[in-house]
Image 1 (cartoon, helix red, strand yellow):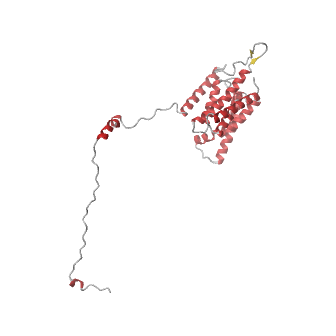
Image 2 (tube, helix red, strand yellow):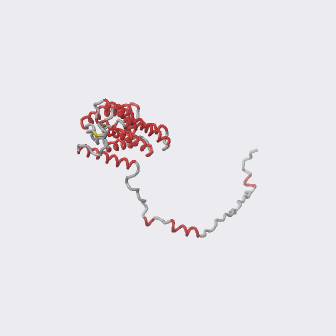
Image 3 (cartoon, one colour):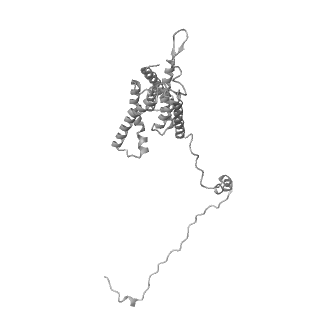
Length: 275
């Protein structure tokens, strides 16, 4: 089995290549490419979450507890409807940190076994889909970049464990008991396998719905088909119809006449004189 440092070195090297390819070939921004490469490095540690009491597990849970709240804080505020005030955000961040760092670690320690379903391809897909759904971006391509980075690092851990399951004790290589316990689709426990696939199915549906691949059908037009007008049938009629050209003529209005008022001189004798 590869050591924790070897897993970190291997996934980090893949992360560097992933970041370079995302920026140079896929034309992502340098910031997006670097973050994707960083997530690939983190993904190389995730399978060891099934041993939270060991040193690798403690470091992974500490890093996860610090990074996940920063990604989820926007979603939590939207789901709960809480005001985005400074005190509210800080309380939520601290609550999520302690919940993941100690609460989730305790649950995983009680329910999981080392080299169980955490070391499997379905677990890799779950980690990638959680990253895709949680990443705060409206661009599907950017969310795919981050999710694929996690999956790449996760798979590097599984691959390195399988490589170290070979032993060279003679001219031909042999295999250790750990062979086949990393890159697998099912575990020894039926309950753990069924639970893993139930989570995978739910997250897969949510991921496809978020990407627009599945969802409710588009709403039909409220206008009945009998009342809808076929413009293809009317267009030839309108094209050949002859409409009279409008004529603009100057309107001749009668000119008002102003006549001088004529009153007898006797009627004006009593009028006051203003001089």
